[in-house]
Image (spheres, rainbow, N blue to C red):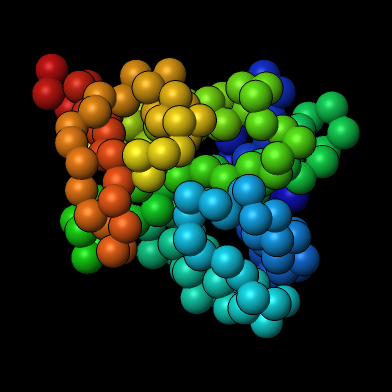
Length: 172
């Protein structure tokens, strides 16, 4: 297990091609993907997402979406992390968790750790986070991480509330 971040209750590690089943199962719950609008059709599609979207980020940018496990039993509960969006000239904070882990603060804990990693380790100047306007839970995570609301956008053909965090250390 290649652990990138450790929090009080969580381990965030790089995904591998052995995680196809985890990605597939996470995305089978209609409530989990209700606001992401990106279902994973089958195991081949999950494999393609890992191979073409998730894993290249580690090599190209030294960050990406990381698998999140609870420390107490090493159970997989979802993913969180940073994703380069070169077409938008930004780094995006994202997260997705299994429903049984909702409401326990895991998303906020993992998101906050990801932001700190982006600013303190990678020295990124700015990180954005987005959620569909109806996704109250995700918006609360962004706000608890002290990200500032900067407006509504259409991103990937969907409405989104956009938040940002600025690395103030770079401007001291």
